[in-house]
Amino acid sequence: MSRILAIDYGKKRTGIAVTDILQIIANGLTTVPTHELMDFLQKYITSESVERIIVGHPKQMNNEDSENMKRIVPFVNQLKKKFPNIPVEMVDERFTSVLAHQAMLDGGLKKKARQNKALVDEISATIILQSYLESNKYKL
Image (cartoon, rainbow, N blue to C red; front, side):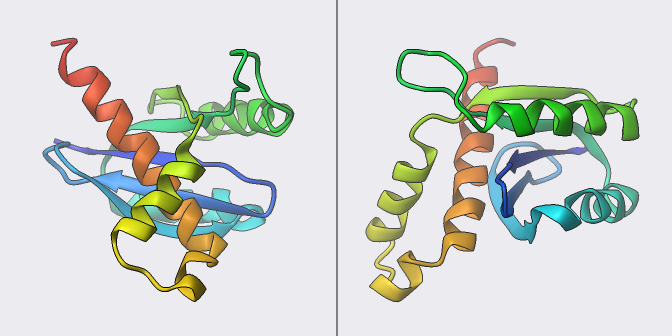
């Protein structure tokens, strides 16, 4: 099997998470500066087998797209063009930052570590991926 890769796309930083090769568990991979994201993905996808890319879909509480969507649509189009053989799906990312902070608290991280925005982005990507895995486990 191949991995599923998830992206929590941000203006400055982008969190990335991947599954194990059996696609059972989501793990944080890294956070990269957004301007370096396509180069990072090219290198990663060249070295690892990636079956699907999941991108966080930013929505507001009323289910409308958030402001960040104007950056994500061109990014998703670029992904599809650069990696035409890898399906790209979008998954609702509401509350992922809140859940990431809660996970950090529950994990006992000190205040300084919880202020690390790169770590929050990576955990958010992991939450996006885990929710994708859980929602698809019942579709079989």
